[in-house]
Amino acid sequence: MDETNLLMRVDRLTTNFHTYAGVVHAVDDMTLTIPKDSVVGIVGESGSGKSVTMMSVMRLIPSPPGRIEGGHVWFDGAALGMPDRMEKDGPNKGMVDLLSLPADAMMKVRGRHIGMIFQDPMVSLNPVLTIGLQMTESMVAHGLATNEEAWKRAVDMLALVGIPNPEERMRDYPHQYSGGMRQRVMIAMALSCSPELVIADEPTTSLDVTVQAQILELMKELKAKLKSSIIIISHDLSIVAGIANKVVVMYAGRILEEADVYDLYEKPGHPYTMGLMKSVPRLDAENRERLVPIEGSPPDLLAPPVGCKFAPRCKYAMNICREQEPPLVTVGEGHRARCFLHHPTAPAVPGFVKVG
Ligand SMILES: Nc1ncnc2c1ncn2[C@@H]1O[C@H](COP(=O)(O)OP(=O)(O)O)[C@@H](O)[C@H]1O
Ligand SMILES: [Mg+2]
Image (cartoon, rainbow, N blue to C red; front, side):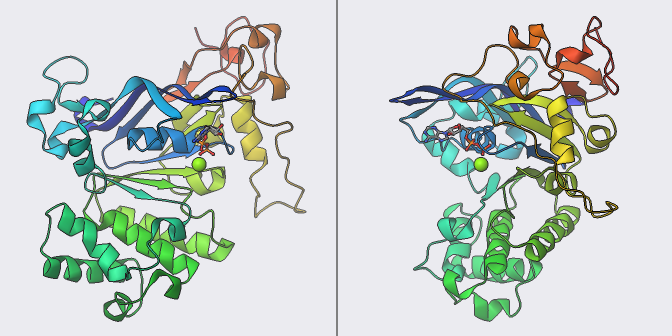
């Protein structure tokens, strides 16, 4: 990829939780590239490590029990305005490792350069403060605006995300907003400091279906207007696919597949991805066939299986899959998959190209 187009690269990130029951390997050797002006989707069943990856990026992992045990989070140093912290040479030239920033510098990154939208706005909004106060707080704290300017900008942002009578609604408290409206406020807040990256972690999961669709539509509209890159996380492939250019499929703390959204649908390269697709409802289905969820459940991360973490649920699993973890191999342009079926000596399975 064109290096000047790179906003963030999560490089070999490993995050564990040291619990009484043992070590939970929540994120293992995760590498993820976010180009500027892009929408990257991360999809996977509950517990696959999506949130822990992003909380690691934000350095918000509760510690103890959590610990980032390895890796780097490279972020565009010019965007951060931290020239003296940039790598001078090498493959990460011009990038700053967020994981090695002092705590005070990291505080300046959160909200200002990376905004976050969470699943449940009621948890992230303070119930005893007005929306207006909460909207203006971070703009003022980051020194981007005076109180008065921040107020004006907050009103504009509320209007932008479709809150009627924004001037008046600034004086309301979170409980006076509906669930969908609160999520709009969260989006407005995340965007208020014009961050280069917005992380939306299950932004529509707590909403009912029609409101879900409206929020996704809003995010698409905003993406067209604003320059930020977006990472959208969901357990639901259809939500991610509707907005992302690139999709990353996670399972048991690792990437099983990544591809452009079109390639992922046309040529899925991992049995897990194929399974996720079958569990997506199709509006054009002839007789509304029942959804086929993937049988079985994700592995216990305290004692994950040796070999491919998906093998116990995989109908194509071979002996080698239970013995060795397959590497992520390139199966097409920008398309990688972690599956031995791509190996030249593997049995032919329709849809699996052989590489190597
Ligand atoms: N505070 C914690 N203590 C112990 N384990 C945790 C903690 N937070 C997350 N985990 C574990 O890390 C794994 C990944 O969790 P998470 O990233 O939240 O999954 P996802 O967002 O994909 O649903 C899960 O097995 C979860 O139980
Ligand atoms: Mg999560």
